[in-house]
Image 1 (cartoon, rainbow, N blue to C red):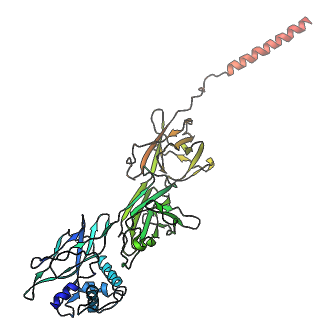
Image 2 (image 1 turned 180 degrees about the horizontal axis):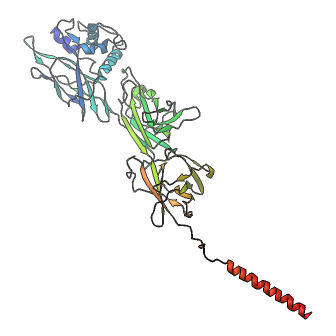
Image 3 (image 1 turned 180 degrees about the vertical axis):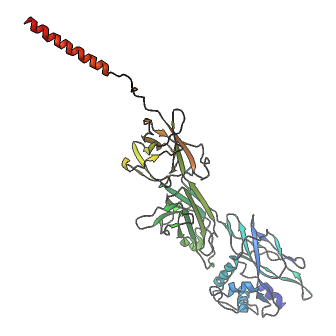
Length: 487
């Protein structure tokens, strides 16, 4: 009977989310663990305490998991029996093997979380599931858009005539879980954006419930952007607006992003980490919708953005998501009236915004837009190649606020400049992309040949000019001779 008390004493606070129910008998060599409120959850399970009749308590830690309980930030002792006696005391202070441990709840929660974080979803089970050994089992739940609190189940023995005859089913566990979805989006409707354009990103998630006994009460948002830079102020700080259930949370957060680095393929990347741990205080905001917004400036043709919400040690614990943007490119084709493509035509790309005209400054090595200028003298002259085309990358579909046009400033030899600018025509949808992943648009212009001048090499007008002069001289001589005779 004394042994039975020890067994049931270890039923623990350990089961942080354990509910009470009637314990039933299991088959001889298996016991069932049932988790209520499981939904579509799958569960990873590991045994951390096993039967060991040679020990004072009759139990001991499974060797590879003892380290998480003896760690300095947990129970900070190598005496595993002392730890188990503390567990017994937490459940039944009057038990003969019970011995109090100061700050037990905090130390135990730290140990349990360490074990919890070693479990992954590679080998999971649905509820209910069976185990084949007596002892304590730590359980971690996995379900899309939900985070489970750590769970523990105790499996004991059934007895006949004072001897173990089988395993007892564990008491049913009432799982505690909180929504953890994270959604990342941007304000560009067609997901095609011009270089140097500001884009507002939105992160939406749910504030998690974190037990007060959790020693790592951290709530951090880590954001990584590629192909863009954060829109920081003169102090190098990014403003992140934080809204909970539609109400501003204190004042906009300020965070200093990392320096801009390059990826292996030469693209720029930058990140920031925003510590929102203060939101977890007393769990007053638990399970409420949190929305973060900030602005970034596009610097490349492909833009990727990933967000991970976690507790620092276990990034992604509370969810993660990603978002992407692309840019567009325009191909101008120059032809003559016979449909032949013409090389050597020179253009300015212009952008018209109401009455204003801006001129494109383009990197000639990549044909990518660098910026817009109000000064035509800063415009990059764009020339059609052997195939009669030129390409400009880093543009976006036009809307009712602006248009792109190609203005011909120099025609190929033998052709006249076309005074009518060429408009840009975009594909039907942003899915109209080519192998480089850019949204394609086209423009076309036709030049006419210069008018022909009169031919040369004929008799010309020289003979007629000489004859006219002779007639005029003869007439003058006759006039003066007649006048003299009259006098």
